[in-house]
Length: 115
Image (cartoon, rainbow, N blue to C red; front, side, top):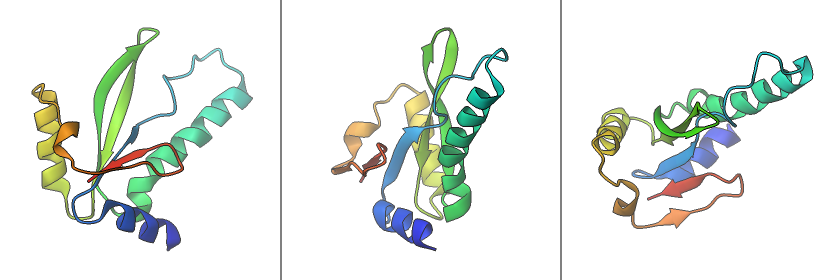
């Protein structure tokens, strides 16, 4: 599959894709049905990458906007589950994790890959 090949090639053996977990904060229940559908469609595009590629993904609490949480996802190469959890643990312990990477690649989709 071309999506899987692209992500696997992008990550290499040690890359980490950093992307938002969801497109924005959760929508209000009072939003229109079309607005909710639009949000769901955008969310699925972010959430399906791990399932389609077989790459592990972990979501970390990242920020608060309008009193609602925003998550940041880390997606690692296949079979990197333990390394990804260790990286997340370091971030949770307050360690700055992104400077440890030597190369930054900015794909056209707006996500960032650190290698």
